[in-house]
Image (cartoon, protein in one colour):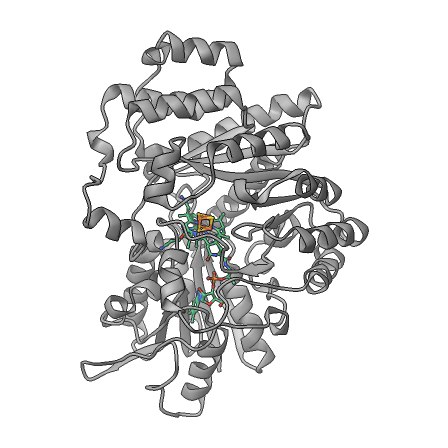
Length: 498
Ligand code: B12
Ligand code: SF4
């Protein structure tokens, strides 16, 4: 039996993990990947994306597959793309079995399972449930009672609670990187994505734990971590096989356990020692932790600040760190040559001009290397949606932002490009009013931020101030675009020749 995964825009560690489990059980697995040119978080230009759309190519490739099962892993932002693809596929291959899993179907299974072109929905962690489902289909057994799996027959929906969370992450096979590597070599040679944890120590109201903790209540520890040796073993094997240039550690918060990190940093330095990136949190950074990051050759970190107003942050977003903790972390990182990205949110209820001025002040005092700013999205079933519905907080709409607020947002976005004195002048004399008005929706896309980060990076590297990741990322993005554009040109040529 063969299973084809369908995905777009990025490498998925979730699919790689599922694929490894399925292959271990003897099933055939492949992937049809859509590069989503000009339609990813790093490069978003909707107008151009239509001209280089891979949609027909992806659909054609799916049609040609002999697989019995087509498995989609879906983020909320990709749900309409995935639904359209699944629907079109079902129309031309009505016998195919379509399974949806990942974060969006996990949060809204009751809605997703209703779609006529979707046969099964997997809620939560998929290794056990998906394998059980495949085995049941393979052996023509009943699928109605498999924990985590939702199905329907004759209009009746069969829902099942999730099983216990995977307790021992070391027991899982290493992710199947070849699956993505075969679609695009850069997925494992340019960089190597890895996670050492599942779950997060925190519970921000706009993020997935605010719903998942509830979903998995009494189903085991929410935050779990692989052993140091298990992660190092994966990286040693990867280094031998792919010779990657960079390791992206994509744990929600990598630095929450000082002891684990100390041991990891020592072994990473000894056996792997490849420049790396990770996510940090203001409540999980001190001198020793920064020391460990230096030991393990971390070149860039990303920290969420979200909003500069401590009260708003605590009350609405459930982020308990003080401004002092944020400033201390920024100070500690700025004393190293580690490149610091900070994440901010725009469109948070209660966020007004005063709050944005506070943010600009903070960034003029403690200088990050790059700033990314996203419009706040209310993802399904996150606590923030409930809070806003049942309180006086008013949801902000991007089109309602006045001119001055938009310009302040733009100032924050480019704050790291400006020398401190100029930035102060812009804030104190309100010179930001001279800036162009930039739609806040475009912040969400990261294109602008990414371009800025590359620009800053360039100068920092020229002056040997920092080893940076952004220039490296730019090269990476360019080679991705060249690779897939060439592919689409070749496809066009072949179809014309025919
Ligand atoms: C790493 C990460 C990224 C990386 C890589 C993204 C990627 N495509 O893999 C980067 C930094 C690029 C990224 C970007 C974004 N991210 Co992100 N990201 C994460 C993070 C921290 C970890 C995901 C991960 O790899 N987990 C490890 C793997 C093993 O688990 P998994 O993916 O959940 O897969 C398991 C199950 O979901 C299930 N499963 C998954 N797919 C399928 C399919 C089938 C058929 C089955 C049966 C099961 C199944 O089984 C898997 C194994 O157990 C999560 C938060 C989290 N901890 O989940 C946010 C998260 C997924 N990201 C999120 C968001 C919003 C984004 C962005 C939109 C941010 C932005 N503003 O642009 C972009 C979108 C990029 C894109 N479309 O790919 C949200 C998604 C919310 C939502 N409802 O859609 C999350 C949940 C964080 C949050 N805010 O709540 N992200
Ligand atoms: S925003 Fe970051 S720290 Fe907060 S719950 Fe999400 S992953 Fe954890």
